[in-house]
Length: 343
Image (cartoon, rainbow, N blue to C red):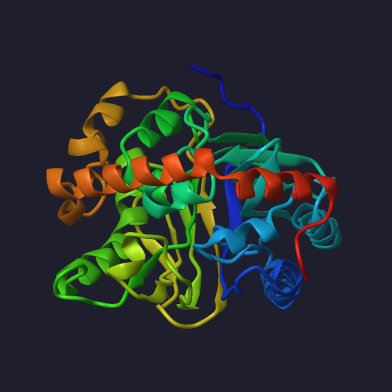
């Protein structure tokens, strides 16, 4: 158990940026974000959240490794420049190369250029083909604005994130998402599962805020999702779209601002942070522990043994392929040498 910082503001002006991303076009995507960052800053936002994998794009093929980079790469350089220019804290996640491996790394950069990093704890489903989960990452950032927990997309849908939030006395929870759905298919992804995914995006930040008593910022990608999928999933489903629905939720569970599914945009509001001296409550962790590894705060449709088995089997197969991939190792080394990512 850790002690949160005693200083810092009691309220914070936050922003969620809902944007479209093009696969592998890191520099293009970063440049596309400039006017949205400016808009949020001009509205007084102090903390700006971009979606998961926004610079990288959500490409589910070996081509994604070409967009891998290090903490010295174009994404962090861009975040530093923008954070300094607008005097804001700015965060997103990207595909980080480290040794022979890739990780989904969220970075929050301060106006002074300090870089805080959290790696995605889990590489769920087919994502395990392309990067490793960090496993035991504490998922907490301490900065001059306060202590923030970070759940990168699927991390929020599993039960262990509750311990990160409560035991570390987080004051605000960040949810960078790249949440998408395939085309409806009566055999593989029936319409009721697509509808459950939509409810998940709408209700998850509200349930988290209400349960833990802390504000939540969710930033998701929007627009079409166009990518091949690895086998065996690629033979069963076709990609479709991102679900958008970014939102800012107060510590009492009130949705202050939100966006729809399709439009790019910026939402900004002021939230009251959970107090730094909050005593913590282990019961909240226990109450958030759902069945089959899922969080009880998520959509009940997904909390089934069948769904957990399917996800687990796909992860096992994907991790097996990742470990044996010579192309992955070569791509990571090229990223470390500075040969990637492309423009």
